[in-house]
Length: 401
Image (cartoon, rainbow, N blue to C red; front, side):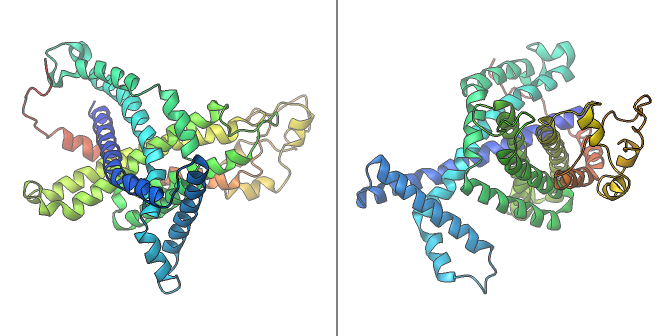
């Protein structure tokens, strides 16, 4: 029960981090948008065609700015970097690219996944959970969660918007910076799960780029607007990553600036340790969801082999499994070789016709890395559960009756 309660707790923390991040972003974006409108008016940019041309130049400048940031300090053009950093149009287009993803992601994940988590919270209380006497008014909050998931707009609308905005070159450039950011965070705070989260982000990015180029077994394009069986799950996976990332960033903020708050200063180390474990638990859950979704999309649209000419031809030849064993440990014990099926009257009872991994070695390597990055996540969950069993929350009305 405590482990299930930890899942509820950490999902709430991640949702709060994502929600507050989106709110802050729009607080920063609003004045910049007004400044952008004033600049457009001064330059006589009024027609749709002129605005489109201006936005293209702004995106080009923003990509140049991000590229300069990645260059070593002694080798980049500092004057150009400073000019781009101070350009309000560059700042606007960067925030706008992020807001176009964060807004639908927050609406989708916080309300949709939030409703599922509220159902789990109610179920922990049994029949008591739907009564008016239940502490925390869980029944009412559960019902309200369904309403919030509805009036924020159909989930399909949020996923549709994400499937478009998350593929913009500017957002993907930001996303790559976020991966490196999580790597740096993992080196400083290894217990947060930031390393596994970065690996999951890399897997998601690889999958997106693969799906944009790949075709299914019938030769049809995979990543396109009408094929929502591909685009929507990938949007869901991104939401998990975003929520976990902002949860980790909030933990870093707590650790670095918490002592300035007199309410937190005295027990800050305990707070940081507890929330570190929560971050690790949620990063593991997010990595697992992303790994599952990406694996289904990458492998799931290939033709499943059968015992026909193509199936026999696909079986591994001598020496091939030895090479793959170093990449995918255990494959030699499950995948049939050509020698196994040479006698078609006695087919091997291993794994059916061979599933070849040609061209997917990079994906398999990244997926295995995520599994390794789960190391320690269950210990973190045990610690969080133990801490949770010792928390005393005074009973107080927190919901209007």
